[in-house]
Image (cartoon, rainbow, N blue to C red; front, side, top):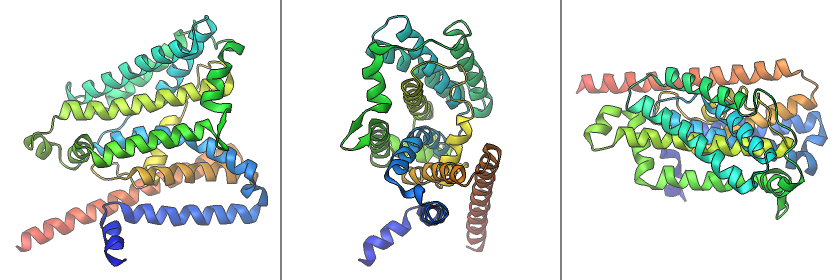
Length: 333
């Protein structure tokens, strides 16, 4: 029993994941005491469905952060996905074809981000800030600067698949998030590409000298981010039954929150997607619980913002302390 436990505790980043998991449990207990409705089956189902999109964009941001970069275009890609898919369906295109075209368009943004950062050597903040603006512009002109009409009854199957339908008692949105988490967690932890992603974030130059293709690996991370953002956009379209140009606003913050609260380092090279699940859950529980407590939206945003800043600050302090210890031990040798 001790050996498996030691292996688990030896995983880099697991300490923060365990800490925030305890924090999540405490939050749930507190909000449950404040309002017993919090633990009602209806609220739990809606809470899980609320967490699912945040988990998805958190997965994408986690991939990028682990490489030592950041993706500010996530929210705009969500909006672009929403508007392109809804516009195509309101023009009479079959939902399956509209979904395929939307995914291709979003992947182009991810590809652009990856190449701008890794090949053109642009700072990720600047590169993704630019594509964020471009993607939001595409969302605005997709339907001539208007929100779309209803996607209609012909798209009811699309809406059921991405939002309203249930499978084995759970909303399909939740199953989509679980499935994609399983896939991307496997790719990150069990494949060569996943090891390369961690290697780049730890030390890009050392990774390059070891034979890691920096351009290809970085681009893959941004493609994952664009893909999951696209899926969230499709979920948004299914939820409202129309396309809105401001869809995805502030989702960059939510993605970073889910990642860093869950222990993904903003300095790269460290993080677990299980932690992203906990981070997204904390975000959802705080939003839901504070809403039950009657807290205004402004207070909820302030609380989330403070938690993100504190999480990043703690990460920087811990990583800086580790670096200092390594330098001290190296000099003593």
